[in-house]
Structure formats: C-alpha cells, structure tokens
Image 1 (cartoon, helix red, strand yellow):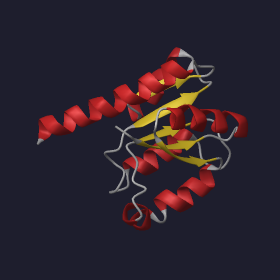
Image 2 (cartoon, helix red, strand yellow):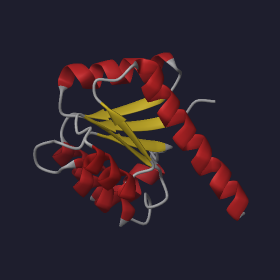
Image 3 (tube, helix red, strand yellow):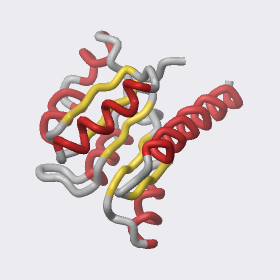
Length: 139
C-alpha cells in the first residue's frame, strides 16, 4: 500500500535523504524545509490541502527548527479539524529521556537522529498501521 507522508525538516541534506528513503518504499512524499511554509500550506490553507488530495497518512516532524518548533507544529495540527487525528512522529536529535517523554505526550512516534533507514520506516509504518487499527476498532 502506498502511504502519504509529510516531512518537515530544516536540514536540506537530511530532508532529501528522508524523502529518498520513503520514495523507495513507494510512499507519496511532501517535504518542507521551512516550518513557516508548512504552517502557511497546512494550517492556514487546510481546506485546499484536503481538496487537492494532500491529506497525509502521517506527519514526520523535526523538533528543533527556526520559526516554529516541532512541538508547536504538533500542537497546531492537534488543534486543526482536518489533522487532529493524523498521527505524528518526531525525528530529532533530542534523545534525552525527558525529551522523548515530552515528545510522546504529543506524538505517536519518536525517532532519534542519527537513525537507520529501516528504523525510521518501521516506526512510520507501525504508527500508520496502529492508527488504522484503532480507527477500525472505533467503527
């Protein structure tokens, strides 16, 4: 199955690498190097995102970024009607126990940098599948 993933990461090389990983796994990938552009596209223009078929299966967010942190983006997504139920995974260098605990209060998944491609893909796929199962159980 081909999933849609939105990646927000301010490191251009890492963003390209992550996009390549998921494209090789047959994902549809939308990337944002700027958290500000992401907010303009997804938060401020949410209706057009839904109409254009850009509604993702998962958001993959860095935490430490200029303009908006990943925490701020996650809170915006949780407060938006279109995105409140879409799973979020953080991908960050913040690997301390307290950082992970804080991240998992907002997001469904957490991957620390540096990471192995297999670890990242597995975390994303498990997060999407768990979300789908939970939705099936609620139906």
